[in-house]
Structure formats: structure tokens, C-alpha cells
Image (cartoon, rainbow, N blue to C red):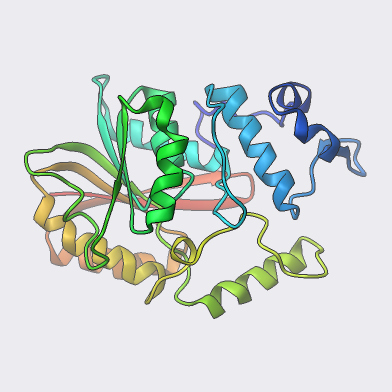
Length: 277
């Protein structure tokens, strides 16, 4: 985990239940005597992340309807901290989140942690409306835009003459609903669940797209060329390490300078690719 993270220590549930009292009955001691929650319980996961946002970042008016993707806050803010390292500047920056979802989490954490101005975009109108509600208190610094053309990622939401210091993107992981359900079943077994139910939620467009993560990032790279004068650094999370060679090949083909930033949260390893022209 990034050394600047506020989540280097175990969760302090005494403090967390003070900001979100509904979390209290869901906290228990495991066999090691450590306070925790049932991470296979979607309600517990949502309330934990609401409490983390409220306690550590002062974000108290954050709500997600059932079925929408609930982001793990420690991992999401790690991406933000690594972006700050990449920028290597103390000046106020502006960022763009491609596929911000209903949770709009990168826009909120980018502003809360570094006071950046943020723009979030999404293809799903319902997600856009929820994201606008979640960011309403920060409307002077966060703008949520509806991408109405599913053939494009930047065109239509990056305005003429607008400049972004960086972009972030958490691409859909899976290539199909079937692949997503299969992965979820495996996860459920690891969590000891009798039935598979996504503890983190997720709408179809948040979890899968044709071609999956690799093709989505390839589209992102190809379109980024047309906005190279309006963006300093383009970045995208890569959940599967085996996709990196194809991504590098596409970046080299377009003569983009690139680097891969490794991240870790406990036993989970992740990374993002950053490129610039």
C-alpha cells in the first residue's frame, strides 16, 4: 500500500461506527479476536466503505442503490496517490475519470485527497445521475458528464480547448456476463459462501464489455492519440498481468512513452499503465 495511505493500519471500528452507526451490528470478532465484518455480505461491505469515506475523507453524503459497484476505498485511493507521484508537481491539477460509474469514487478521492478538479464520465445515464448526486456538494470542483456515444471514450466529453493533467480508468474486467459469473462463483467459494452473490455489486457496463479489459484498454490507447495535446498522462488499471504485452505492443506501435506502476493492498497485487505522447 502507498506510504501516504490512511489505511496502513487495521480498521478502527470504534471510530468507523461513530460516523456510520448502521455498521455496528455487522462488526464481530473472528477466531483470532480481531474485529471485522463478513466481506461476503454486500450490506456490510457498503457500510464499511461509507464509513471509510466519512471518517478519513469527510465525504458523508455518498449513497449507492442496490446492485451498483461498491469500490474498496483503500485500493482506489492508492491509485490516486500513485497518480500524484507520477505528476511530480505541487500545482493544482485537473483529472478525468473515464467510466466513473455511479460511485464516482476517483473524482471524490482526487478532490478530497489533493484538491484536484475532476471530471467523471459514464455511458449509462442512470449512473451519471447517481454520480451527480454523490458529487453535488463539490459541484465547483467535480463535473460529471454523460458519454452519449458508446463508440468513443474521449470524444464528446473532452471539450475543445480543455486540458487534463491526467486521466484514470478502471476498465470492465470481463468479456461477458458468463465470464463474470464464473469468476464470481470462484470468489464465493473462497469466501465460504453457499451461493454466489457479488459482495461488491456491479452493473453490466461496470463489470464486462465485448473483448474484456484488454480490448477496452486497446480502444482507450487508440483514441488517446487524438487527444495527446489535451492530456498530460493517460492511465488505466490492468487487473490481469498477462494483458500487459498486448498493451505495450499497442503503445509502442503508436510511439507513446509508457511505464507500469505496481501496487499492492495486502495479498492483492494490481497495477496501472501510464502513457504520454
